Amino acid sequence: MKKIILATLFLTALACQKKDQTEKTAVVTDEHSYSKPELAVVKHLDLDIKVDFDTQTISGKASWLIDNISKGNEIIFDENTLNITKVTLGDEEKETKFELGAAVEFHGKPLHITIEPNTTKVNIYYSTNKDAIALQWLTPEQTADKKKPFLFSQGESIWSRTWIPCQDSPGVRFTYNAKVTVPKDLMAVMSAVNPQQKNDTGVYTFKQDKAIPSYLMAIAVGDIEFKAIDNRTGVYAEPSLIKKAAWEFAELGKMVIAAEKLYGPYRWGRYDVLVLPPSFPYGGMENPNLTFLTPGVIAGDRSLTSLLAHELGHSWSGNLVTNATWDDIWLNEGFTTYVEHRIGEEIFGKEEAEMQDVLTRKDLDDNIAEFGATNPDTRLKVSLTGRNPDDGISQIPYVKGYNFLKVIEQAVGREKFDPFIKNYFDAHAFQSITTEDFVKYINDNLIKGDKALADKLKLDDWIYKPGIPSNIISVHSDDFTAIDSIQKNWRKTGVKGLSQKIKSTTEKQHFIDYLPADITVEEMAAIDGEFSFTKNGNFVIKRQWFVQAIRHDYKTAYPAIEQFMIATSRTGSLMTLYKELVKTPEGKVWAKQIFDKAKSGYHATTVQAVGDLLK
Image 1 (cartoon, helix red, strand yellow):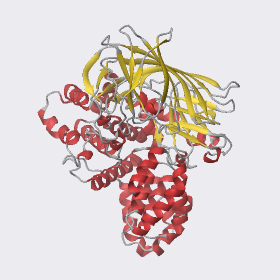
Image 2 (cartoon, rainbow, N blue to C red; image 1 turned 45 degrees about the horizontal axis):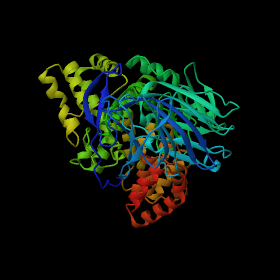
Image 3 (cartoon, rainbow, N blue to C red; image 1 turned 45 degrees about the vertical axis):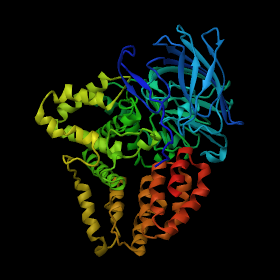
Image 4 (cartoon, rainbow, N blue to C red; image 1 turned 180 degrees about the horizontal axis):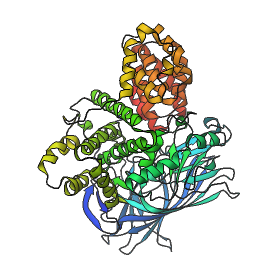
C-alpha cells in the first residue's frame, strides 16, 4: 500500500450530472479534488499544446469554458508539479490573478483563479516538468522498434492534474478539442477521434464530443501506425508490431457486437486499441475511443485477448456511467468485470466462462486472505479519506464486485437482470454516480419493495461490510475437475503427454496454481520440460509459473524471471512476484537487485508501489 498522506484535503462537493448534463442532483464530496464544482465548474476544454522530447515537457494553453454557478469571484483547479505562467479570462485574454495553495502529498496544490461573475472562459498557460507522474517519456531503446522516442499518459486516478490543470475528479465531466504539435516524424493520438496516418506537419487535431472525466484524458506520441480490423475497430502500434497486433485482435469487432447485443449501442463512434511499450503500468486502460494496451497481450495465439473484453466493457461501465468518487471504484470495475465475463461467454463459450468464474472466485479468496476478512478495504464501498486513491485500485472492487452481481443475476435470472443492467446504463449515461445512487436505483427498479428478494441479495453485506458474504454463489467447472483429477495422479503416471490434455491458457493457469505444495525441483523440471512454461508461456502463464518457481527454488527459471520482471511494468503482476520474493531473506535481496536494474524502465506508479514493498 502506498504512503498515507499526512494532511486532510479540503472537503469538496460535486454535482452529479443528469443525462442532459444540465440538471444537478444531490451534492457529493470528493476529498481527492480541491475543486468546488458546485460553485464553478468546467464544461469544455480547448487544449493547444506542444510536445518536446528534448526537454521532456508539454507546454501550451488550456482554455476552459466554465459555468460560474455561484456567480462568485473564484474557480479552483487541481494541479500537481505544473509550472503555471499566466492566466487570462475570456476571448479578449484579460490577465487575472491566480494563487497556488499548500501542497498535499500525492494531491498537488489547489489553483485559485480570480474570475468575474459573468466569466465563461478561463485560459491557463502552463508547462509540465519531469516529475509529472501521468507522463512516461521513453527513449528509443525503451520502445519495441528502438528507433524513436515515445510518450504516453496515464491519468487514473488523480494524475491528469500533472499534465493538464483541471478539476481532477471523476464526478466532473467535460468535452474537449485539442491541437497537439509533435516532432514531424511522430504521430499523436488521444482519447478522442484519431488520425489514421501521419501527416507532414506534426500538428494533429482532436475532438471528443462526449463528456468525460479528467482521468480519461489521454495522449500518446510515437512512431505508430494504424491498421483497420473492420469499419469501426482497428489497432495502433509501432511498425514492427502492427501486423501481429492486428492478427491478435481480429475478433475485436465481434466483441463490440456481442457487448451491444447485451447492453445496447456502443456510443463512442470508433473503438480502437493502441499497443504501448512495456513500461505501461496496467494490462489496459479504457481511454475513450482508444484503449491503451500492454504489449504482453500479444501472445501470438490470441490466448490473452479476453483482456480486450474488459477494456471494451468500460465503454459502458466506467466511461458511460462513472464512479463519482474513488470510494465508489467498484461501480467501474465490478460492473466491467461482469460485462467482461458476459462478452467472453458470448465469444468463447460457456465452458470457458465457467473456468473464468472459478479463477475469479480464487482471486477473491486470495485477496480476502491477503487483506484479512475484517479489513475495511475489502468492502465494495471503501473510504479513502486521507489516502492516495490509487490504494483503492486493488483486485477487491473487480472480483468482489463481480461476485456480487452474479448473486443478483442468480437471484432474479438473466431474463430480468440483463434488461436491468441495460436500463441502468441508459438511465445514467454520461453521468458520474455514487454507490448510494446505485442502491436507490436497484431498490426502485429491481427489488421494488420485495423483502424476500432484498434479504436474498444482502446488499448491505456486500457493499458496506468487509469479507465475503454468506450468500456468495458456488462455482464449478467440469474442465477444471478433469484437471484436478490429473493433478492427483500425475506423480504416479508421469507428466509425459499432459500438454496434450491441458491446452488452453485458462487450463494451464489452473494446473499451475494447484501444483502440490511439496513439489520438488526435479518435478518442476519435468513439468517445464513437458510444457516449456519458462521459455514459451504467454504473459499470464509465465507470471503464474514464476510464482511457483520462486516458491520452490526452481533456479533454472531464475534468469527468465529476472528478464520478465525487467521487461514489464504491469504493477499488479510485478507486485505478485515481488511479494513472493520478499517472503525469504535471500529473495528480498534478489528482489532489490532486480528493482535496481528495472526501475528506470518502470512507470512512476510502479516504482512507488514496488519501492514501498521493498522498504
